[in-house]
Amino acid sequence: MATPKFKELRRAYGFDEVAIVPGDVTINPDQTNIDFQIDNLTFSIPIIASAMDAVTDVNTAIMMSKLGGLAILHLEGIQTRYENPDEILAEIAQAPDSEVTPLIQKVYSQPIKENLIGERIEAVKRAGAVCAVSVTPANAKRFASIAAEAKADIFSVQSTVTTARHISKSYRGLIFSELKQSIPLPIIVGNCVSYSACLELMKTGVSAVLVGVGPGAACTTRQVLGVGVPQITATMDCAAARDEYLRQSGRYVPIITDGGMGNSGDLCKAFAAGADGVMLGSILAQAKEAPGRGYHWGMAQPDPALPRGTRIKVGTTATLEQILLGPASVTGGSQNMVRALRLTMGTCGVATIKEMHQVDMVIAPAIVTEGKSWQLSAPAKGG
Image (cartoon, rainbow, N blue to C red; front, side, top):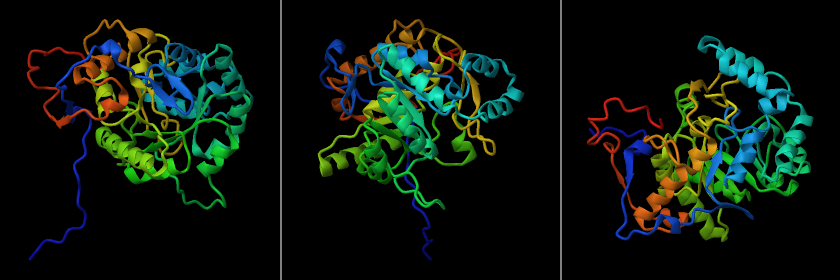
């Protein structure tokens, strides 16, 4: 008797399970173009600093912009709850492991001060930097007008999982097409990991979509909730949605792979899988200028009932400029991200990020261990 089938599972792949195949032709890495565009804003490097309090504050947002990238300021974090955020950040960094989660829950229980939203945005803008801000869906309508009035350049709506259709008891929830009409800003929405969810989000008129559920080093969503899709597969599926939406509408909506990258090789694989940009957290939290002081913690860790993040020690390894643009002083791929990307593109014989989407990849579960038996005392991934 045939065994009935309840569910068919398909194989999904993460960064450590795939490899990029070199091209038949190579080009000079300096001739590659890695520009990244969101609506009418163009960035010379396709790297975004995550909207996490250990990664982005006013100073790092300004620095990222001047280096050619983008940083997103968390409007529901420490920067908008406290007049003196540095003191609070230092307290979190100094707390023992056994006490840090209750401390973070307490810190984030303080109310958001709406006047600080405008002040933080204006501080970034006064420095001549591009200012991107992030909120959760629950506060999107409330804070959108404040952000627009303060002259923010990009408005991001983020949660662990975001969909175009949400069922709740409220009479009228957040409708992205209406939000788009209410503020004159590009809107980034995330996060999602599936073809169908990504396609539906793009149809609402948003400017970019964040891809990834639970892959970040400081996130425990996959352990707590059991949800997520490995980043290579998630990126490929959402890239397919982007291309289908382009075919349907003639409008190109970039996708941003968010989280899970521990080194520059992972970053390159994200682009080969179809990403237009990448969002980094733990790697940039290692910068000397990072507000986390060598620590990084998940955005869902402050949840008062079910924390889905943890504080991790990433250390302080280099300046933000060195991590992004080099020169690298370590061999683990945690510095000079931009040069690594250009070298990979040159090795594959592609001149643009869109051409990078077409490079060949292979399933390679031994790619990080093959022939590495002599690296007995190698640092942890990304070190």
